[in-house]
Length: 401
Image (cartoon, rainbow, N blue to C red; front, side, top):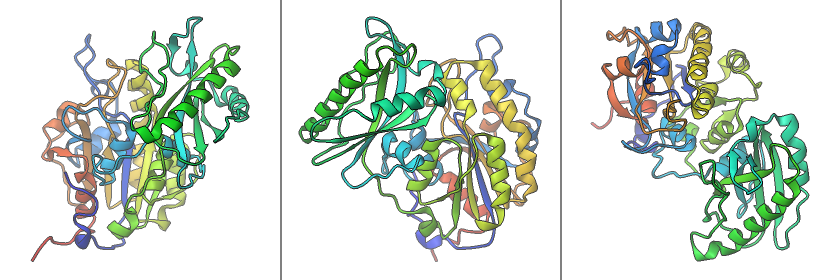
């Protein structure tokens, strides 16, 4: 698996422009009634036309058989070995909403959830309550006081929030409270290493007080905490690749990922239409753009096959607008598969295509799992995506004498 710094001496600065469009949770699996995946079912004439002019294949985000989180999936696409550079989701979520993480701080990603009278999980996302409903709850949680630590709660979006702990002797080496299934109780936090026992005890105190405070809420009457993490450190993409990279993402966590990778995060609106408009407005200012499309992943996680099909169809009309900007390299990728029939991230390879003036088409008729499996690129590690893109953009010199 390639890592971002391994070819450092080969990267070169050029005026060519690259776009990496990441459709979150892009890959899927066949519906049992039709035998077709979400991509095969969707009507996507623009993606299909692009595939006919591109080099196509499949990417493996981490390792065969390993279902990745969005963090490792994106880091791999940016060229970082996800096994070497492991980043907790809490830190990414915090950075994505511009929450300061000082050395020693611990951040966790929070989900509001719904439990029944026995404390059993009914809905791990509290019906995806809107921000207008969740923000006041965050304000109340932010007033919780625990001796020995500063507790801060920040609203993110909809049912998500960030918990930040600030104090002496904190550790990220604690377990999560989310059991990942309904019908079970939230888990107590335990220390993974002895030095993390203080943090585990503090988090359990916070959860207990939060549960009491939220008990009268109709939907968001409990919370789940995941991805405890401290501030990470990665070699910046711009320095290593000799580029001026920018990120356009509506969802906070992906802005956090871009921040950790050293990209300039450009403010944008809440929709993908806003993101594309932001791309147009900033086209002359950078030579690499990461642009993120979230809805397909959310529909897949909900187990809604038809909704995921529609989300992919909703993405398709934006492809011409991106192509009209004239990127020297346009790559369409996914950070992982989220098959609706599994209602979860999966380990399956993800469709990928790369378009440049050097790709004239290789006989791939459509952009989907089966067609891309027959593409000339074959099955490649996701960490190869940036290297291939830079080669097509003239940003990678010959390796060796």
